[in-house]
Each structure stands twice: as structure tokens, then as C-alpha cells.
Image 1 (spheres, rainbow, N blue to C red):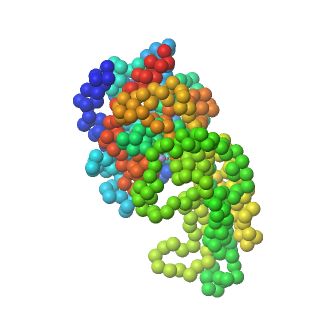
Image 2 (tube, rainbow, N blue to C red):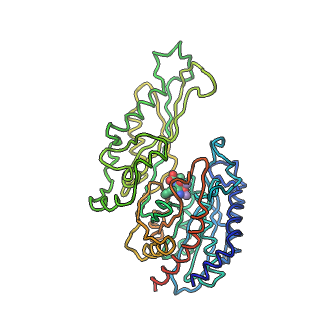
Length: 457
Ligand code: BES
Ligand code: MN
Ligand code: MN
């Protein structure tokens, strides 16, 4: 059976690659309204590809934002159902001048496909479409499949909750399968078993009622940029602990045993620093870099601005300063609660000389998935077959809010079987995805279905 699958993939290799390149040419940037038509065009393209692959009941489901593309193949009510989730929207490509080749004109160089969305998540979504086509064309689909590809993941999936709540029957499944994460290395396969949650905030600090001459007024009037910088600085102590009262209260303490288990995953601090071009790392005292980005919560500045930032110099004491600040959360922190704690603390920190405004952008809950489930086992066996090595379970630092949402609303767990690499530059210039990884995914996914269907018998 699997040789039949492999020969179908082999025979269609060029087409599988070229179709992905076509999809990557449509700039589906969900954050920027300028790309609205392209985002909608991408949804249509995904729909057409699902139909061509053999899916039934394919539809574009409207939401208050960008639509969700849905398709299914139900073979028998007595067989289990796998729900595949992914996203067809991508991050903005800025800063454009740092790309070696244009972000929406994909090229293959040194075995990598360079384009925005190549890895996150069009490339990984398309592996599922092609794996599905392969199973259909070789008559090897062993259970029911539903595919749900959304267009607002990169902007917080704010309409997805409503859709999931309103479509519980349609989305009914036994397991969710997602490829939107990474493996440790091409020769060190891994399965993601944890994602962090998120609270994304924006703050505005207002000083004087207008921009002032910094010589005429400077020295007597509080500068909102300085005030904001001091407020931000005080939000972490010298040990790298976040000082927001109550921030750590619900943080799940990971046992020594589990930490020792996690520390077995290969990690070279030297190579990590070399890859990033830094000569030192900084993180919460008492934890390793891998722990900083997995089992511990963080607070990061994502942007800060105010005053004059154009060419040359302008002597101004600005009226306002701004920052975008996000916090990554771990079990059992709650996004809403953390956002409230942040807002309360930030307002309290503000000296009398300024007014502050705190707004909430979006959030999501953390999720951990079990390593002793039949579904995890199916993924593990599938990867073992194609990589020749048993994958290592790892928690990652990124967020996919839908995972917690599926669990809460549909009571289904997810398997996070991604094929990217942390070095694929997702959200950065020169995002890329290995041709090796793309085809590894297409080969591995049918094996997951096979082992999952067998195990569920
Ligand atoms: N695919 C990523 C998340 C990811 C990447 C998880 C690598 C694990 C490893 C996803 O598209 C993403 O970027 N999510 C956002 C959150 C969202 C609410 C904007 C994130 O993590 O910043
Ligand atoms: Mn993604
Ligand atoms: Mn992303």
C-alpha cells in the first residue's frame, strides 16, 4: 500500500511543487486591508484545490472576517474522523527591502522554497491537500476526513470561535491534525506537544496636550517616551521575572522529572547564538533557553514609537508615546485574566505627569497535548517510518489559539505534526520551506491516517 502511495507522489512531484508555488503567488496578508481581494482569491484557490483533490461538500464559509474553506470525505459513519486544520493567510512581508527575492514571487534555491507563507502555513496546508489527493487517487483513505482552512490565524482568529460554536455538528471529529509547527532538525524529527497562549496589548502614554519645542519646555515637562521606557523597564526585575502582581499565580509548575525529560532534546547554546548573531542570551533566572521558550511565560515588546523618527533631527518633546506589548502564556494562565492584570498594573505604574490608555488586541489560551494517546502514537509511528527515527515530543513557544478552542468547544484534542524548521524565518524576511520538508509531510500524513484508523478500530 505505501509503495503505491509513494509512486503516486513520485509521479506527481513536479505538479505538487508547482501548485504550491502558484498558491504562494497570491499575497494573502490578512493584517492589511489592501490585500483583501487577494485573501479572498486565496480562499477560492484552496476551495478549487480541495474539489480537484476529491473532497465533497466543499464550501467557502462566510464569517464576519475572512472566510473559512471547508471540505470533507465521509466514507462511513462507523469509521473515525480526522479534522485537518490550517490557515491560508500569511503575515505581512515587511520589511520588503530585507528580502533577497520578492516575497510573492516564489523561487527555489538550495532546496528551499522562498516566499511569504512557504512554511507558515500555505506550504504545510498544501501538504495536507496533496496527501489527501494521494489517498483519494490511490484508494487508500482509511477513515473520514474533514478539512478546515481559515484565513485569519495571523490576526488572532477572532471570528473562528463563533464559527466553531455554530458548527459543532459539521466539525464533529475524533482528532484534529495540524501542521503549523516545526521539527527540531531534518534528522531530529519531533512532535509538538505544547503551545503557549497569548495576550496582546497596546499602550498609549500622553504627556502635554501637543508636541513641544524640546528646548523651550524640555526639563520641566515629563517626556512620555521617557515615562513609557521607565514603565516598561520596571515590568521585569533583575532576574528577568515579570513584576505584574499575580502574573505567575496560575503558572503550572513543571516537575523536575518532566524538565529532565525535556532537557534530553538536543540543544546547542553555541549554535543557537551563532544562528541569531548574538554573543549572549538573556532570560528568566533558573531556567534554560529551551524552557524560556516553552514552559515559562514571557513579556515582549513588539514595537515602540513616538516623537520624531523620520530623516535627520527634529528637536521635539512629543505629546505621545506608544508600545505594542505581548505576553506568552503557559498552562493554566488565562488570557483575559492576564490582560486585565497587565492593564491594571500599567495604569498604576503611570506617574501623575501622564495619562495612559491600554487596549487589548487579541489573545489565545495555551495548550498541551498528551504523549500517551493513540493519536500521538500514530503520528510518532508515521514519522518514524519516514524519518527513520522516533520523533521527540517538544513544547514550543508559539501560539495557535484554535487548539485550546477545539478542546473547549468540541472536546477534541489535537496532534501538532508540523514539518517546518525554526530556521525557516517564519514572520521574517526570506521565509522559506524545504522541498525535503514539503515532501516529507506529504509522505508522512497518509501514514498518520493509516495508523490512526488502525488504532481506532
Ligand atoms: N504557526 C504559527 C505558530 C507556531 C510557529 C507555533 C512555530 C509553533 C512553532 C502561527 O501562525 C502564529 O504565528 N501564531 C501567532 C499567534 C496569533 C494569535 C497571531 C503567534 O504565535 O504569534
Ligand atoms: Mn501558522
Ligand atoms: Mn504565523
